[in-house]
Amino acid sequence: MKLLCYQNGTSHRCAVLITDQGDTLKVIDLVEAAAAEAPGAAPSGPWLALSHARDLVDLAAAPADALETLSAFLRAESSRTLIRRIHRSRLLAPISYPRRTVFCIGRNYLEHVREGDLKRGIQTPIPQHPQYFIKPPSTVIGGQGAIEIEPWVSDKIDYEVELAVIIGQPIRNADPESAMAAIFGYTIVNDVTARDLQRQHDQWFKGKGLNTFCPVGPSVVTQDEITDPHALAIRLWVNSDLRQSDITAHMHFSVGRIIADLSQGMTLMPGDVIATGTPPGVGYAMTPPQFLEARDRVVCEIEGIGRLSNPIRLRPDAQLR
Image 1 (cartoon, rainbow, N blue to C red):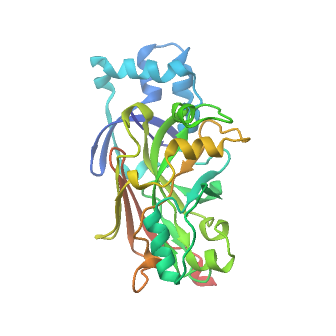
Image 2 (image 1 turned 90 degrees about the horizontal axis):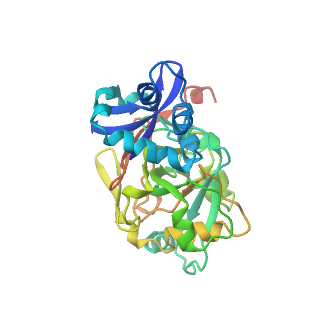
């Protein structure tokens, strides 16, 4: 299943994506599905959790039989009567405000490591262990949300398309096999980065932690639909210019290894988001460097998941500084 969140009046609702037709999406709303299953009655059992979900954290934490119930409902011909159309502009981030943080992996594609070394005229050792940093919840926006830039804060804004994993059950001290079994689904993250702040502070948090610097979406694809997360095409365009194009097989550390390593001594919780690193082709490594500017549009695509598209906008009050 492809699961998404959207704005329905003043409320946030979860839905199953049926078809994507450009700006128009066909979905089945979970609140409406629950009402159809028990007309005139309050939702109960698995439908109670499904109908009360306001983002994918709620669904990831739902009882195990909730998604099985939903899957069986979708196979029934009667479910087709509930298909409704929504405009893409109403999409929200599938996890609109992470309950904790967004965990991120740095330098996980060796060609990306090499392009950075070449640009800076250095040679760094190949990572022997995953390298972590975090992006705070205030960085998260959805597909169509604007990445806001403030030139007085940074004028070297870069992009990084990444496969992201959503955790579906609490795990601690996992091995790679049990780590893979704990995955709820997969989505796309754009790890937007202020390169000058990254260098200035000699660490990654500040340059990657600015507001709106973590577009997520457009949907979450449940684990059963991704046979192998290490066999996906991954691409990014700035406007019509293809900048990044690779396959997730080129990750240095596998998805299972990353989750297992991160879980050592640290409990990972349902709804935790883990971004797994970016391939080569980032803007700062180009000659000359190519940074994002107002009115650009960044489109991230991962095979089997979809496209995450975000405009670049000057923050409305930036001209006051």
